[in-house]
Each structure stands twice: as C-alpha cells, then as structure tokens.
Image 1 (cartoon, each protein chain N blue to C red):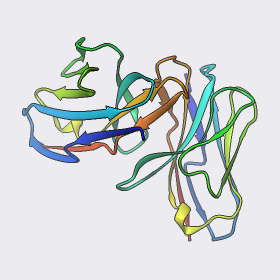
Image 2 (image 1 turned 90 degrees about the vertical axis):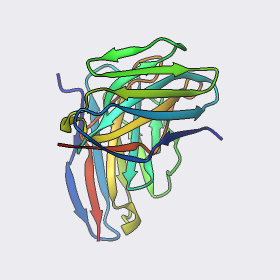
Image 3 (image 1 turned 180 degrees about the horizontal axis):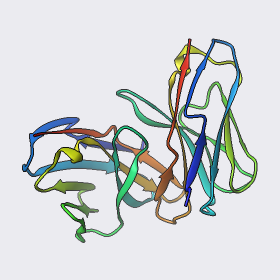
Length: 111
Length: 112
C-alpha cells in the first residue's frame, strides 16, 4: 500500500534556528514529491521535486529528493515566527493522478 | 486571479440534513479533488475527477456524492449529514503532469 511518512510529527524551535523536516515515501508509479505549507487555511504549494539530488530553493527554504533511498528533506534556515505552520509532504502517483499525503510536521517557532 | 473558489466557508447542519459544497476553478485544470481534513488524520481523499465527465472514489467516499458539472465545477453532496462528517473540507484542482495542486480556502462543516 502506498504511504508517505513524515518526521518529526511536531517540533518547537527558537527564532534563528535551522530545522530539517523529513519525508519518506513508498508510492507506486512515483512521479514527484511535493511540499506544502499549511497555516490556518488551505495548504499552499512550496516545492515539487522530480529528480534526485537537485536542490530546490526559495529564500530560506530548500528541499532535496533522494529517489534511491525514497526520501526528501525540507530545510528552513534562520527560522522566523512566520514559519510556524504544518508542513505537508505528498507523493504523486502518475498512473492515477493522486497525491499520497503524509500527516504533516507541526512546526512552532518561538520568539 | 481567483484560482479555486469554494463555498460556503462555514456551515452548521443538523443530523440528517443535506447540503452541497460548491467548487469552481478558473485555471483550466483537468483534475479536481475533494478532501476532508481531521486532526491527527491528515488529508483524506473523498472523491476525485481526473477529467471532465469522470469521477472516482477516494479513500473515504461513504456518505458523499459528487458531480463534475463541467470542466470548471466539481460539487460535493452530503445526502444525510452525520456527526462523523464534521470536518474541514478542501477542494483542489490540478493541471500539471507531476501533481501540483491548488487548494480552495476550505469549508468548516459542523454536524450537530
């Protein structure tokens, strides 16, 4: 059965810390790995990763995919209180166009 | 640039009542999805429509029906609401080959 597992489930850090969020996946007909950020409303798209070893960056956030070991990490450097959110990881199964979602990592950044 | 528009934002129903959640997207996406999100259970797929004219069950379809009215619109109907259907519902659409979804703002539904 397809599954995506995220760790840790929750994390509390201080402003300025660097955090690494983990996502492992087992997805049949895997096409891509996606990261979303969810604050109080709907998830918003962060990254889509399709190739191993190529880092994607957006400001203080970066992510990389390892298709051999079936995992991805999301790094956030110099965290700010505005980074407090649930970070969701999902694997895309290209054959049925569905996303397999992890349960998310709840990140709290304290001032 | 509206993206995915979902209505209503909030709703309270009595057990046994029916209602329809509306979703429309203006991005010319082929695929549309309905999810529910509950604490500790993540996003669970209720129904999806890979393209206009098709609909398929997701993980938790019981108690729900859907209609893909046209390429833009995908509605979710609760025929006889139950307290177990208290949840936050999200509509999403996707036009990318690799799975990028755009979500609506969500509907917080309470069934009493």
